[in-house]
Image: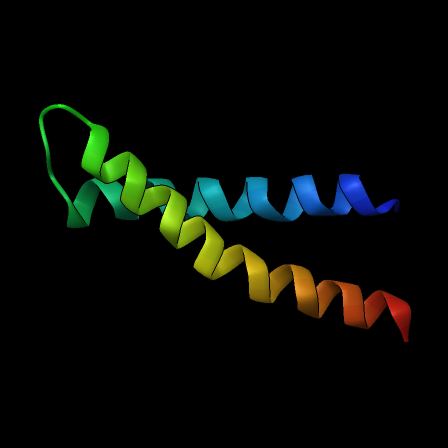
Length: 59
């Protein structure tokens, strides 16, 4: 699997996982704060997953 596809897949899954958490923990009628929280959570979930996946495929 090439690198950009692996990156997109990992962060796409992390975004989908973080999306409900953003709206649960930051209820806001405008939707801006939950979206910002969701992006932050996707980075927190996605970066370790991507690095772990990269290490597992490399070895």
